[in-house]
Image (cartoon, rainbow, N blue to C red; front, top):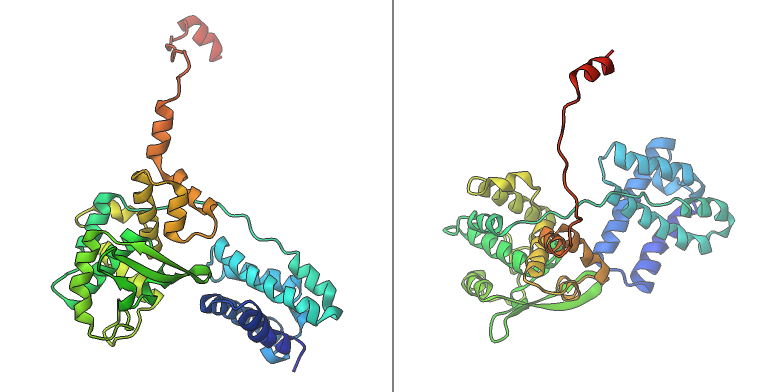
Length: 329
């Protein structure tokens, strides 16, 4: 067994699990990165993963792997940077475990993240939201489940992982109705619910049976919905909603679009961005500034307060025909 295998094992069992108490989502993301990297290195140099050494994963190999992610797998710059962050974390841990490879480790740690363009966030207007919420067929069990999930997502702005992790007992529908979730960064938060959401959930929850610890939005078999399943159902109902609201066709509607929609609804209602950051569970309030850039209403209001310069557009006057003839010679 090479020097890489014990370091990799200790990285997950000691650094992530014991020292940092990393969330399951973080462990899964780092695991997937390592699996992709080891498979890529095996294909490149013909060594099985257990025989690979740290020196095999030098800066040249890591650079080729990052290029492979973008060129062959079609990953975005954001995904590339997330994979690189996982690799940096692994090699930072390896620095104290394998000082004899300090040069290789320092070269890998020096690989910078890719600068990327930040697109304006996509969100649904009130008309598009109504069309999406009307798309599920509420005469069926799946339609009622999907309607409740979409409505809760649009109102609360919960992440996909937070939605799928909700249990029946997380929805408090009595006085002071709210939903509790265990969010990103191991932070618990409670989000208040509107009367409309409460009515829908009060109708939906009795269909789930007596188990309070069961998923709030289960599969037919009673298990938790996966992230992919939620993405598919959102895309399915968005496609249905296009008939009633054609503008939806121009947008890539994903579960995260519903989160952006909740944030923009709060912003349009005059809610301060610091409160929106608390509502969405942002680690840094600066993250919420992206919604200010997306809101044209705020920019138009600012423009209306600006004194325009005192200037006229001018008038076009055609040149003298003789001069025009000389200019064209």
